[in-house]
Image (cartoon, rainbow, N blue to C red; front, side):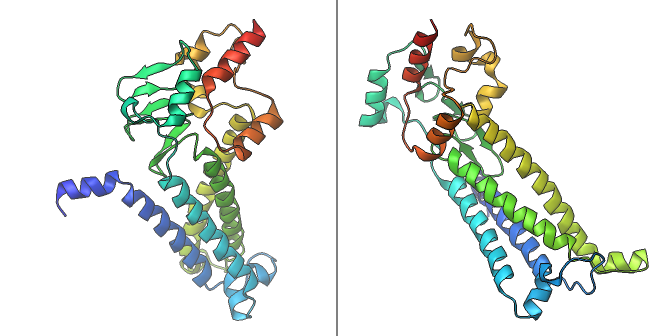
Length: 278
């Protein structure tokens, strides 16, 4: 490949997605193939993947593989789907035109790159597009998280965390006992490395899931939470830092986020909230 072709492949996210898939299945294979022997801890043998295979108990190994496969499928779903790209003025569809015409507002902004920029949208320099209800650009997905894929991103984090915690349990229960340090390290070094990777990813995913569930519960995005002082429709509000014009309460916020699949004219929501607080 030429340098330009390599650049195109990298920009398309191929290398990132391939690395994610490879790392996932390498760790899964390590957990399946590691010969545990006698466990250091008194944990039931059913917890060991290798012992389940040897005893013909395939239910738990099969469920674990299905969970890992589900997490990979969700990863590619969120990574490859449209996060909510805003169409340019020359390509507005009927729905976008209706939203613009019904929401005449000084908050309807113009992006220097994409021209039209509805409220809560932001231009992503990596994707080179404006994204509706922009949350953040995820380098591990090589895609933005926005209005259309944010809910699936949260579901992916949940499935990924379940798979990682199960893998963490399998790895911890798979260490063989040993009297001397060096023979034990030689016997368990690969599993120890897999455990370290799984533990780090478990912590990161757990923190991400907790933060996103909190933001969803108050109908706020990562970008709005981190950059409130720079966002025109938030920084000039008189209600203080806790005043969120899009917050409809915990249950309504969760229902809207997980159950409603539609484009929202946030200008109208903003205007109604402003009118009710005047």
